Image 1 (cartoon, rainbow, N blue to C red):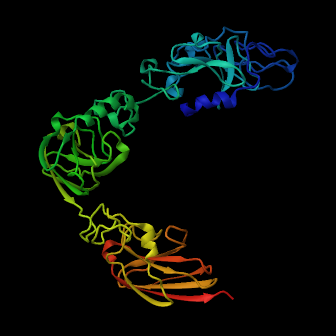
Image 2 (cartoon, helix red, strand yellow):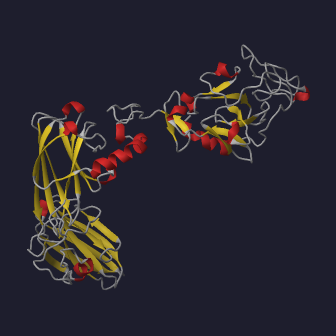
Length: 489
């Protein structure tokens, strides 16, 4: 059973009759049940585990009674059953209980435990655990907590690794012990979960100040630098790199500029390269490159950089043995708004820096203006060309980030609209009820040179937008969109 489910069992499966003392006869060391068929089958601490059945009343549930044998030292540390007066050890290795805890066997339905115990259903067996009034009555690594029905018992609540003698790691979230990353700087995957050192969540508390310090000490870089990972830190990890040492650099574009940064890494050792939006947050990784090849291999990545954005760049050795010298080349290409060329991170560039014309003075799309400026499609043929189109809309079946052209059409009445798209390149179309409204259809099933076709039911007077979009950047080009309409009878 998953040890993380144990805490839930306390509340959900606690016997309503849980309590102290014996209920209906003696058990203990194979003792006989009480009169009148009220006894339960003893399973106590007899040498062979032999049991005896109540004298009358037919078969009864199996479990231990209390009172007849040596009381179990509930909650005492243990590693095997025999250490618990022959009863049961809730082992750390099986259940995650810090240093194990002695318990007695019981029947959750009957709920009988020796004095000092409370019967709890552990899913596949019933166990008497230590009852308590305060945490002072519990062993180190445990707390006195309500387990349901206003009954309190000693349950796991480890706070430090030393309390987990066998598994070695205390999970402070649920108070249980588990296997984990015990040494956060040895370059080894201690518990075999594929996460090493500071890349393992087990090391979060240990590594956080180390990561913050490494990021704070990152050197600024603008062009070409020579570096050496041999003297680097070992606290960051990229999604494609290894567990060797790394060096961190930070690039910030010239004041007021945005653009594209090309980063090229050369080294004789096996090194990888990655960038993040925030140095200390692995979830903000932007790009990662590592071909896992040494001997002069070159790694290259391109990053879109916004105005005043500081971009952490990490050079990471695959293993400690791969650490060594490297060269890092950086080439920044600024985007010039108003030059008529759409350069990332520009969304558009209409050759001017004027607001209100669909492309703002900062070269961001004024979406409502783009949709409002869509030419009205007519019944019959409508010529267009996706070359130079916007690239901010996206259909569920078309390309991602590829140029599109828009057409507006308002059905004269309820009916069926038929659309046929002809193009020598691979292009598709989709229809929405407005600029960012509901998609009615998306068609991109044919290869270049074959028509895309679809008929859709439409509502009279409801404006539609038809988006024609290239599937790949190389598929932009001329097209013809033919429309026909059949009114509803």
